[in-house]
Amino acid sequence: MKKIILLLMIVLLLASCSTLRELSRYEKENLALANLKYLNGFKATGIAEIAIKGFSIKKEFVLSKNKDTLRLDILESGIMSLLPSPFATIYVADKVIITNYNKGFFNDLVIDQFPFSQYLDLESLPQGIIDEIVSNKAFNIALLQFKFDDLFRLNKIIMNENIIDLNYEKKDLSLVNITSSKAKINISLDSFKPGEVKIKPLKLKN
Image (tube, rainbow, N blue to C red; front, top):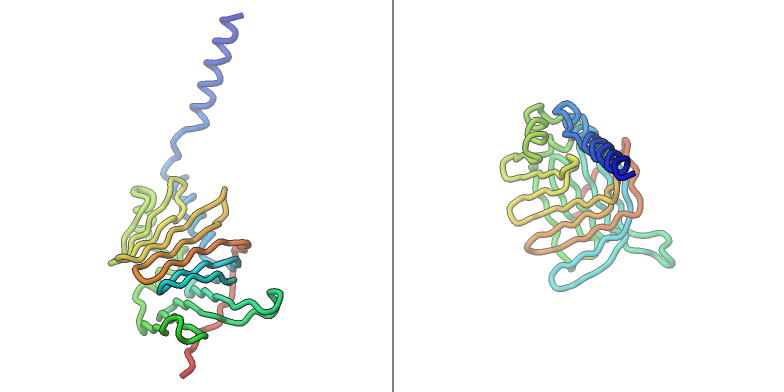
């Protein structure tokens, strides 16, 4: 009986070792590409907690991304959460615009040229960048650092003192934390729908 139990334990051990085998480079690359595609186009909603200038507020948000634009609309809830109005927007394309519809909470910001906009299309990254992700779970573009977890999912973006942390629950993106010297935004996702999405350009009113 002891010999049978020992034999079963050996079989189970060998089976577990085989299931935990190292992925081939080809498999790692395909996994990285699939995860990049997951983040290339989507629309997400949820709750954003914003701390800035000693104030803290909690708002609803809509976060949208496609291959050349990212837009975060933070909303002011209406009565019983109906007909929400815009509170602030962060818009990233060939330029960066951060606008506050309730003036006084923070000033509008416009960066007329955003040299990294070409990298918003995560499915068209150069092969050299894909190789860096597979080999080092990271790649750098000038001041930007992109880091990936053991499953080759993007989990951190760093630019100087500005840090974006992406957290996943099972396979789905669930939490995004944005930290800088002047503000902190914690974004909790209630829904996440991958796929093509049209994003309305943002124009500041004088």
